[in-house]
Image (tube, rainbow, N blue to C red; front, side, top):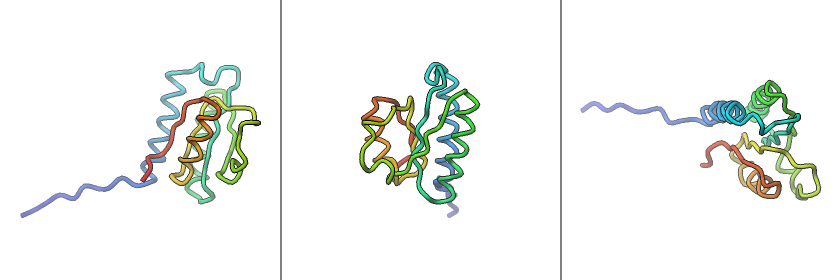
Length: 116
């Protein structure tokens, strides 16, 4: 009997899909970044996270927005006193929980890679 193994999606696939989702959201809702809005990008310290952050940054800047580069450590004390962003993006699975808290604090949408 022959079986076909399907390729399991990788985190790189998830990150590429996330960048596509950011592009699609900003295309469908251009007012999200009206007047130079800000996207907070939560990332890990690994190379792939930094590359995903760079890809999201390129998309956001193409839509006239700014990027706030965050890590879990930078959010440890909370973000309630910081100027809020208009969108939160988590490019690493390890940052999803923190990104959820940040998005809830600022009452903004969240886009994240799929959790494990």
